[in-house]
Length: 167
Image (cartoon, rainbow, N blue to C red):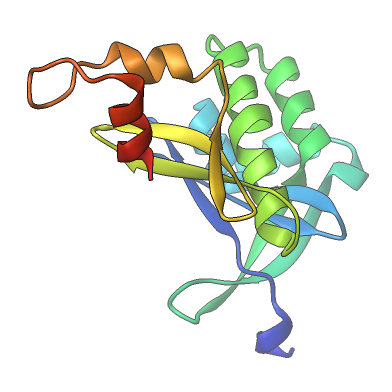
């Protein structure tokens, strides 16, 4: 096994729980143990047995500490099938987080050229922006949430001041 060619997963956190995801052959795959913990399900093996065989695979992964570990992975379609099958209380919130945050970031991290989805941590909040040609682009859907927060100085800031802070 050549450790230099092993994929390295990206780390995401939801409600203080880890979800590792990576891109293999243009498909987004997730570590099944992490998904199981997010869903509150007891057994990874039972969860894997309920999915189709093309939705689950074993893969060696390189971790940040240079350790190599074999994990059971589940595909993007397998994640959605598991969410539907187990009728989670937070089904729509978890599904939206995976499809709107995790999957775009995994795909954009793999492509060196073109726009990338990035998360900026700023004043106790996380802002999703598009990094394209050296500039950050904010979605209109994110602006009301961004502008709702009062500035730390207590005074009102105009749009120019907010734009200056985003740089």
